[in-house]
Length: 223
Ligand code: DX5
Ligand code: ZN
Image 1 (cartoon, helix red, strand yellow):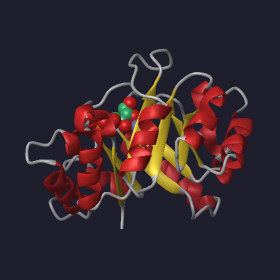
Image 2 (image 1 turned 30 degrees about the vertical axis):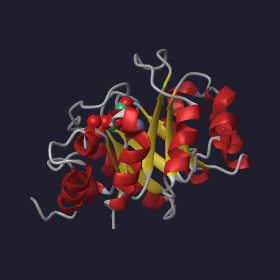
Image 3 (image 1 turned 180 degrees about the vertical axis):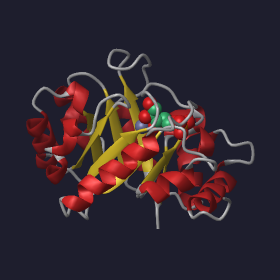
Image 4 (image 1 turned 60 degrees about the horizontal axis):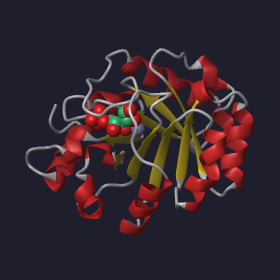
């Protein structure tokens, strides 16, 4: 079954622990933490301290998405904060293999991603070293953006690359604009983990109902 990873970017930060607990209770599989530096992406969000607070609020895997320049400088801080997955952008890593190896040496599962305009060829050579490959279906920086339609084909291509290399253990994650209208096609294309921020934490019916609806949509029930 596809995993659902609510992104706390759209949560109420004043009630973060409570909202994370509600997401876990409703059947979320992972908690996604978006780290932005105001340089690689225009927005600034959170760092290791809030990641540690999320770690304390849940037993679920904490999936940290680093949208920061010079990620190597901060890997150990996020490992110490309790990250289970650390995903870096290929665009921010000059020595990508070294960065991915450092993450693994810290005892964390490495993930790799690229911006929508970066071709998958940029990460093909690193796929056999990672536990997660992420297709960004919006330009990183903000929650609440629309799914870029060409992302579906990019997911299919990445799935094909993973299958051809016989890397069955890799999670294929999609992040950006996932909601009840886009979830089913992202899953059919090959995604195994759906990140959803506004569709979970800003849903008018609340977090629990939002996760239940998203799960039904992901299984094709609402199509
Ligand atoms: C975007 C972030 C996403 C974001 C997704 O830069 O990486 O994780 O929170 O938000 P939604 O689901 O609202 O598009
Ligand atoms: Zn993200």
